[in-house]
Length: 113
Image 1 (cartoon, rainbow, N blue to C red):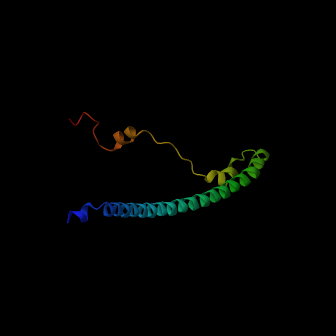
Image 2 (image 1 turned 90 degrees about the vertical axis):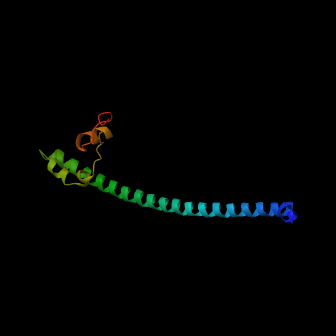
């Protein structure tokens, strides 16, 4: 009876089966990760293309507008309507403590007890 549980061949076979299952799970996880990374690569390629198109539009509009601004006194009105003026600017936020302390109604640490 103990021969069935203590047989080295059966123990080795069980270890091989466990290793096989682990290898299958690892392969499945890596395949799904590869699909994810392929989708990200595709997304970033599209983003590069979109940003290149936007950059070419901005540079093509900026060159003629600059020439007009030199020719016309007060030529800033034309620049505002160009694509360069429509580019969104990212402004840095203050520190989290600055944002939370001013308007959140929370007491600073130590005041609440």
